[in-house]
Length: 457
Image 1 (cartoon, rainbow, N blue to C red):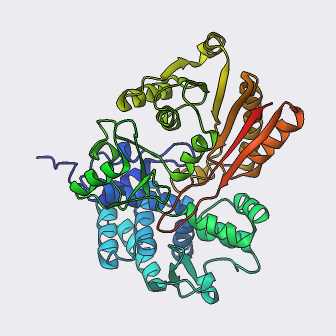
Image 2 (cartoon, rainbow, N blue to C red; image 1 turned 60 degrees about the horizontal axis):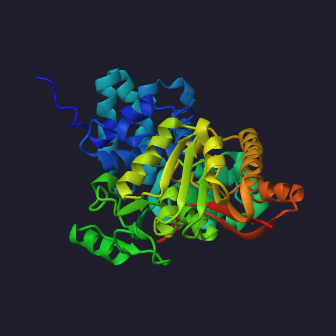
Image 3 (tube, rainbow, N blue to C red; image 1 turned 120 degrees about the vertical axis):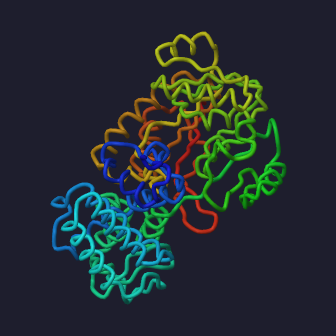
């Protein structure tokens, strides 16, 4: 009789997911990758931690195996990555259980000889770790891989560049981030802020929900979550609620009834800065997945005309489904090809929410695979496309109308530089509001984003 695949351990499921997942080409979908285990949350955590810290993990494997990771076969490498990830970044897990299961997995899939190799590498990593979790100290920074802003895993030998002599190389290696990106942050934000951005980019991000104020209140949602045994708290702004532990969103009480949407505090700032009004005709041409579109409708009491479109028909369907779940009648979804005609038919456009495609450098903690494929040249190409979109949709605004330009990037070339370039060519527009939002770790952590509101004179 075949065993039930849903009884796979979290480590087995995570190993299989890593073995077949290429973060350079795919967007990670934990639900699809880990559909065959009952320990989905723990398996998701392992995959996320391994992908997020992949460069550091691979460096440790190479250092203590004496072999480049490209010479280790896919499944065997996945087993070692999961084991090294747990040894370094999950200090509460007993090391004997990590190594025993790794050896057994290698024996079952690759045979005794490869199991001996996994055992040797795992034991060598274990022996070179002095303490699996200690307070971070500048004096031993080269020996310690950061886990949180306050703690790290300390080795008995230098495994990182000198943070004082090579700050960019150190941050890149310690946080598994592209060197060019860290260099850009150091130039734009300085060493202290760049370090905090790196820490925030490697955090396990909190889950925030935004109550649908047309159907409920934050207090009511807090009570509903408490009744279901879900620990949560109101965010400082009083409009969002932070859940203290991970949960499957669709299973949360009230989700199916359209009582809330999932939204990070940084993402919520764009609509607040735009300050839409009831009775307006609002254009949202890059609407998918529809979270900000719904926020627009809720902010005006569902008493505006919101024209939502997206270049992806599949993603536009998600906007439509979201509006239906939340009971929002003011949102009209329009296919991308039909958008020019819809704009003409709508008459004067009072506001545009232009949430442009971007590099996602503000949401690296949430979009964990992005760090493996984002490049400086790609960011430059995105910025050129963002300028074209701004030119196109600013032109449809009526005099006195507002446009909110927003990204989930923290790169200056995608944010203020785009706005400045546009304003230098259009003296009939003025900047009336701007909010850069850098990612942050801590108890009330959040992503990074940018929003600016332009008004046509």
